[in-house]
View 1 (cartoon, rainbow, N blue to C red):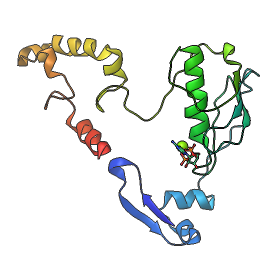
View 2 (spheres, rainbow, N blue to C red; view 1 turned 120 degrees about the vertical axis):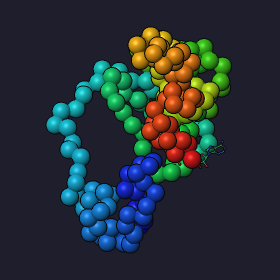
View 3 (cartoon, rainbow, N blue to C red; view 1 turned 90 degrees about the vertical axis):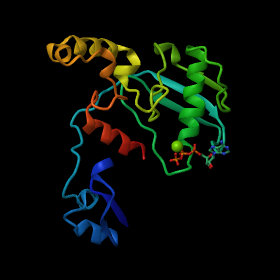
View 4 (cartoon, rainbow, N blue to C red; view 1 turned 30 degrees about the horizontal axis):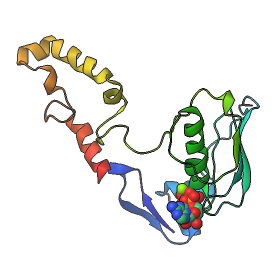
Length: 194
Ligand SMILES: Nc1ncnc2c1ncn2[C@@H]1O[C@H](COP(=O)(O)OP(=O)(O)OP(=O)(O)O)[C@@H](O)[C@H]1O
Ligand SMILES: [Mg+2]
């Protein structure tokens, strides 16, 4: 077992521990080891959200390796789909569920993977897919640039006395302008892209 870390992005990139799981568990530096040994743990909540009791149900899913399965997705609570790599999670969720809902509710024409029927989506208002891809055309987009609120923030920055004194116009306050952005965040942003 090789534990890479200790953190993510800038804080990672080192071999923290290597050896048998038992050896990794004994390493005080390895966060993974501490969780494996039970020294650290995530508390299970005493109460769970009951959900609404409704389901979206997919019948006869058989794209890729799926064996004509029927699956109920409970509504009104946070759920997850788990399983070993290659077992069919993405096929079920992205290729079938997501596209089927997009087709039925958002009138999207992207053809879903093979399935027979989907029910229960009348209980949903809309389908929003969130994944790790950047939300705009460039990796620098973020919720603020995407919704346009950043434009107002830049206007506000340009109106400050400090900006006026220095002659900074709105255009300076941009992720793409050296000195106009936070150079620390910029460094983080680039290292994440690598
Ligand atoms: N476009 C494709 N064409 C053919 N077979 C595919 C395609 N996509 C996935 N598969 C196969 O379907 C099976 C399920 O793959 P899927 O990607 O759904 O698994 P997964 O559970 O999401 O895995 P992971 O945890 O690695 O993301 C695998 O055998 C995979 O090789
Ligand atoms: Mg997957």
